[in-house]
Amino acid sequence: MAISNALSSALSGVQAAERRFGNSANNVANLRSQAAPTVDGPATDADGRTLFRAARSVDQTTATGGVRSSQLLVDPSSIQGYEPSAADADADGLVHRPNVDLVRETADQISGQRQLEANLATIRAADELLQATLDIKS
Image (cartoon, rainbow, N blue to C red):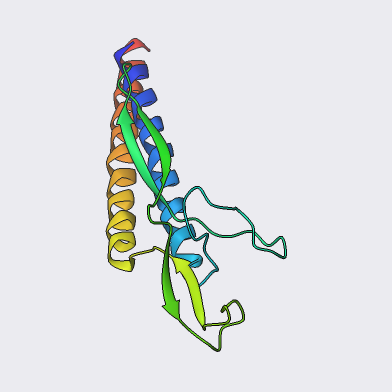
């Protein structure tokens, strides 16, 4: 039973790492997108185009020993900048860009990679233990 618990915990960790890395990649990919001015503001602009909102992955342990990952919106959701030549600039030349910090995103991606590696090592160890158990039984 302990092997299945270890596998279950490790698999939830792999899924959390994937969500963390995917969320960070989404933030980086949308670095220059038009952002929602506030977290609880409109989700689309006047023309109906979706406004981007950066998010952070937060992992919490569960009672069964696994990991639950959730996404929280970054607050403030945007940073105002002066780009008069941008297509989405207002009359004053101001634009709203997502509040994405590349240093933090790099750290999140490295953390997600290490989280994935650690959980895959647990899965490999559980697989080897299970294989050894089956060899003893046969």
